[in-house]
Image 1: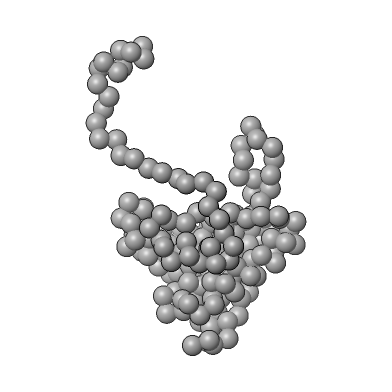
Image 2: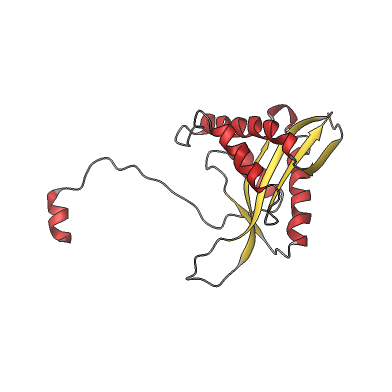
Length: 173
């Protein structure tokens, strides 16, 4: 397609489109891995309200990507210190959410969003940024590797199949 992509700072009139895209993001992840949380019945409304409350926050940036006058992607990022006070203070960028509608993928929309976000991070004096990507999201992992991402930490999960036996509890007492 290679139609012109316009990336700009999100505004209040964009919130409904962002909420719809967020639902798409949640649904996409649910299809990849049902262990990931589904959206609450009013999750999209609450997501939009939280973004609206912070649109003027200088430590947060929400960008939207438009193609043919329609919002087809967004990214939500912030400047944070991901380390607890037990470690040296280290301000970095954090990409909380990024999503491109299925019909706009593989057309440079995600790359355009990240490129604009990097300009903002640079202006904020940020030297690096981080994000999470679902373990089953191979396309997402490939995208992040293509923009220079490298794994740093792997988050893991295990189920709790039963309560510990009394013998274990006695040993800890």
